[in-house]
Structure formats: C-alpha cells, structure tokens
Length: 143
Image (cartoon, rainbow, N blue to C red):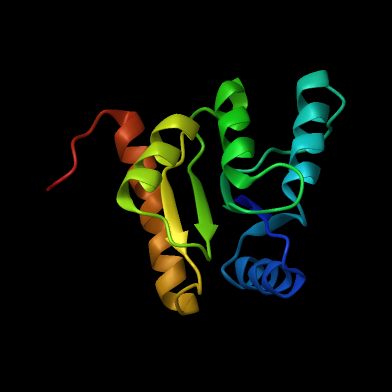
C-alpha cells in the first residue's frame, strides 16, 4: 500500500517515512500542505503519472494549505472519496472542533501529538483503515 504522509516538521516526516517503510508500505512524503495541493492539481489536470495512495496521514497545521483544507479538497475528488484519511495535531482541539473537522472535511480520525509508540500508532492507523473499509462496505460495527 502507498501511504501519503504530509508533515512540515522534517524530523517527524523522516521518522514517519522510515516507519511506514518498516511496516511494509511505500511512503509518498510531502513537507507541506501546499505541496500536496500542487500534487492534487497534477492529478486533476491528468498530468500525474503513478499510483495513488491508499491512505493519508497529514498534519493539520502546515505552511500553505492546512491538512484539513487538503483533506476537504481530496474528498471532492473521486479518486480519494473513499480513501481512509487521518490528521495529526500538536494543538488541543475540543470535541466540537474535532467533530467539525471530521464532518466538514471528511476526516476519518484525528491523532494527537506527541504520537504514540510505533506499535500503538500502527494499531491506531490500521484500525482507522479497517473502520473505513467496514463503513464503506455497509457492514455495521460493534458498539
């Protein structure tokens, strides 16, 4: 699977990119929301050649476009409507802010920074991906 990772803190981006590879996935890394936005322009114009990601993990607060703005745009594109998408943030969001971002921008989950251990992070991301698949297939989840 290809995982899109967007994070403006270079050390975190490099760490996530390395961990995604260790987990057996191919990272598609961007250092800003604006760079993801520009890449989306290429997809919409038909000039992007390559495989699209199967999952996206993006920081909320990045230079240029914010992660939730990129997520919102991705949800308008047929190729990304069903893709599991998670955001991460170091900022405190109250329940209302979280719900609004998830509802308005089509975000499946928001993860707080500092990120959990790699094992916990992998379990969390796999759960987000699995829940998205279950929700899209119409199978109800256990409470």
